Amino acid sequence: MSSLTRLLAAVALLGALASCGGRSYDPPRNLDDACALAGERPEYLRAMRTTERRWNVPVPVQMAIIHAESRFRGDARTPHRYALGVIPMGRQSSAYGYSQALDGTWEEYQTATRNRRAERDDIRDASDFIGWYASEARRLNGIQPSDARNLYLAYHEGNAGFARGSYRNQTWLVTVANRVGERAVMYDAQLRACRRR
Image (cartoon, rainbow, N blue to C red; front, top):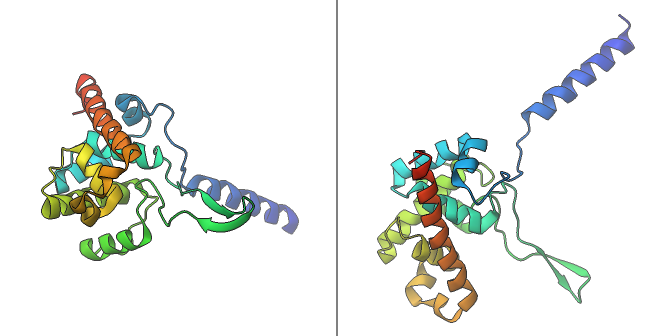
């Protein structure tokens, strides 16, 4: 075998290995069916069950929050802002990943949980972040982990903003939070029907 042939074979092998090792950030196909979602991505359900055991946040609540934040896209980011419609000004915020956690809140989570390696585009870390945030919302605002609506309001506005009632003048946000609550109920019923709860 010539050195050129060996080199080409090595490059082909490395290319094949690299394509297998990367993370897929594409969302599951059916986001309106919790059973189909869990069937297509069993690692999501495993991660959320671990979070439920650790933080007492039901799987359907986690699913509904992730749906609202990223539609289950692991590398989700906020849109770019433009001045005069054409000059790029950066993104609307630092929110990233499944949970759309902001840089500062994510760092707070990493410090509190002593998990400096946690990544926002890893479903295990993102669901654990939601569990941690829910525990903070319960401690600071008395929100039950099963209360998807109010948990989402605190998640979006921050615990201090929720305590001030900053969401009350944001009709669109209350509408989204209501939908999160409804979706959590829907996901719960679906998971019970297919015996994944």
